[in-house]
Length: 430
Image 1 (cartoon, rainbow, N blue to C red):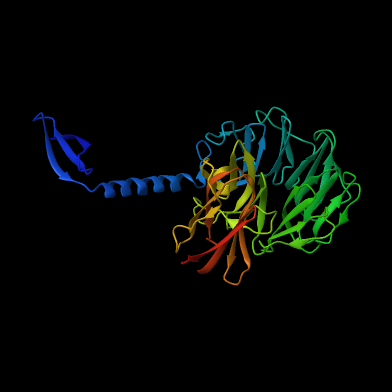
Image 2: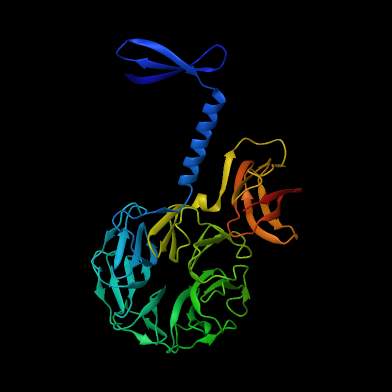
């Protein structure tokens, strides 16, 4: 009976495979195996393991495959609102989830301020927990379909179906309907002292006095499903497939971004990377303030509806229509330093594999710290994706390019770093 195997290296450099027969107490050589084949098998296995890990992973322990509608981080806690199963909480980065005592509601929206957590329900108003989700109590805002919540200082704002925006200055003990008092307000955001509201069919409104008055912005003919603020920039995610609009002057003017053919449910940001969750097409990211977007769906089953996004402890979390997912932030950016040794010169290598479908790897080296920009162009010279536009230390890097959303054809990638520029060609074959 064969019980073990031993691999030894002979003087010829080739391995010898020896089977050990315990019942005979001797070593019996069986056959030689080419060392290259072994190395190839190991490399293939390593690549397979790497790919299987570098993707979205479902976090279903304790929560199952529930449809989720909202997601927030509060301190080191994660909260997700589900369809008809209330609020679940995780204290260990999504490894385990526990259903809270708010367990029988459709929780459409969530917000947090300190240890206070607010849950907007579909038809039963807002519930409040003052102890990080351990217990819950209904606020005075009852009987409303609350689809968005925002916290600004001591003020809590609630966007509802049919009746606009409500405000409370005492943690929900009392509520007042603001001047924006009709229509469906799907989204709310805070920008300094301004409150921003996204309405059904009527675009974006802004209030600078806690809702006493509102001004409709130039983006006035879209249904705004989600809002995100980064400094003076406001991103408005639309419904009905109009994509993302952006304002760089606090809402005075707007321009449609290149992500113009999707419905946008959610936003998050990590570093300089903006993340957008879509209606049925998963997640897109942008590293250049929304000028270009790359789809990042590795690990998803199909294209999920991503209702909520948040960042916590080096992970990005996504609440989808059939599960909770997470992914390492470093994987999302798809740029990895593979050597800190300082190279003698700048270099840009040929992508591998080439031709490719749909992911390829681009390796480059920089001999000194500085801003690095790696851009992909189509055959017409039009900018297709900005893979990198940030400062990096000296070393050698790998950057992944995912062309899932692009057609087959010839593309070019250009590296700009210091006074160095280089362009190479690659071929996408689907």
